[in-house]
Length: 132
Image 1 (cartoon, helix red, strand yellow):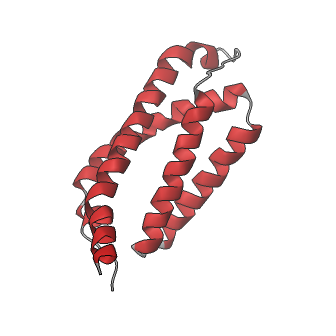
Image 2 (cartoon, rainbow, N blue to C red):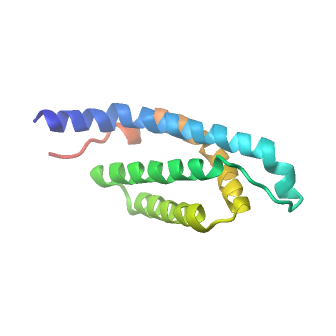
């Protein structure tokens, strides 16, 4: 019985704030990549970031956690498709992407800028709990 309450607390309280922090960190990484590599990418010059693969792995693991939460909370099929497609795509970029592709992946995390606010404020993400 305690396990169920702990899981409910984790999904309702800790999980949204953890995701908020992760997505905020990804946003900062995206801004940093844009600041450092935008000219090179725009001019079609080589771009390389030693940190890009680490950020890609963080994003993949964040999608795994989001997918586990979506399964437990019985989210809509579009949530599952998003998490699976993003997870697979970024995993492929991690293993087979060029350095330039990995930098572009890191730049794309700027899109996570809205996620912390959405994650923290959206009642749909925090109100639902799994049914017993």
